[in-house]
Amino acid sequence: MPLSARFGIRDLTASSAAAALAVVLGYMKIYRLPQGGSITLETVPILFVALWLGVRPGALAGALTGVLKLLLDPYIIHPIQILLDYPLPFALLAFSALFPHFPRTGILVGNGARWLSHFVSGVVFFGSFAPEGVAVWRYSAVYNLSYIGPEAVIGLLLVPVLIRRMPLPGQK
Image 1 (tube, rainbow, N blue to C red):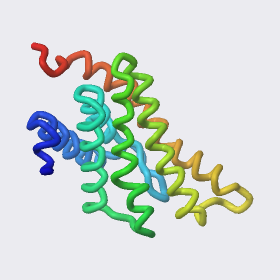
Image 2 (cartoon, helix red, strand yellow; image 1 turned 90 degrees about the vertical axis):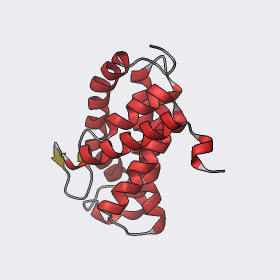
Image 3 (cartoon, helix red, strand yellow; image 1 turned 45 degrees about the vertical axis):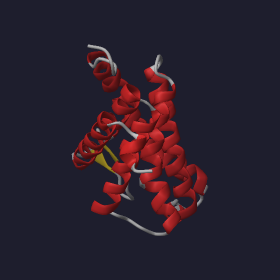
């Protein structure tokens, strides 16, 4: 079944535009961490589309963002790591749409799911970066929280304001 049969034109357009904007915003780094990861505004368009249009368009926007980031600036160690660090964590931001009446809760859940994907990748593939004497799981948890946490706060501040200003589909 073609993608256009599973998604409406509005959903495809919004998801694609959100992915493109997310990639552009990802290049405008507020802070860059030494072993990858940075604080940006890239999650805002994905969270917005998820909360505005639902889980499927949000997941599409996130997955497209991850694929574009993979194509434009890859850091590849293993095929599974590609999935855990690129399309999956950004697609998981769409879990925010599971809480349409509580967008802040949804934003925290979506970012928590994203963090979990990066955490697993960090434990399995980037454990060698952990300082001596620090458990790999602890290093991965703190390292990934150090940039996903601030991005979640940015989302908590910006996305609800944007959602309030945008009519829901079907409303004028």
